[in-house]
Length: 188
Image 1: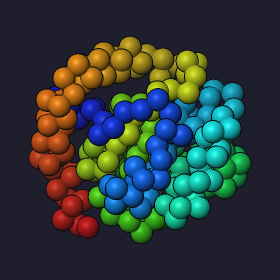
Image 2 (image 1 turned 120 degrees about the vertical axis):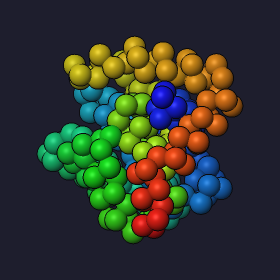
Image 3 (image 1 turned 90 degrees about the horizontal axis):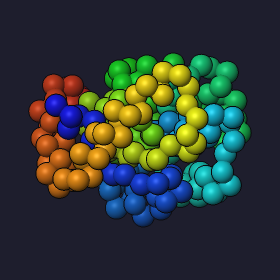
């Protein structure tokens, strides 16, 4: 049951992911969460994150913000980064992910989702058999609803990291069996 929340990859921050990481996996598009993935609660963006986004854009890999946040916030951050976004994505529901893939003209196996939350970013990506990357949250301050989920997410990640090979196999098996994954794979 917990395997649906296990990421394909785990790292400290987005800037740790080099262009080769994506090209080796034939990733042509990155969906990326905003809050506590790219920016902190106060909308600060680290310089290495800004440089990473510019480097990825220059490499030809598409980037699209995918956020459950409102239109104004997504557009404001998107304008600062020079990246388009989808707001009110309703992650982990599939609607926002499918919209993003259609907007980028890419299939699920060509896309990666990067986010800081297991229950929205990772679970949503896994439901569609998208490559999932979990990053540590940028800042410890969260919105009120996320605060309640963090302890459970930490427990799940401890289980995953303790037995990562075994847990990765369980995740991959679940992704393959997922009815939604099968629908998306057939469609693409």
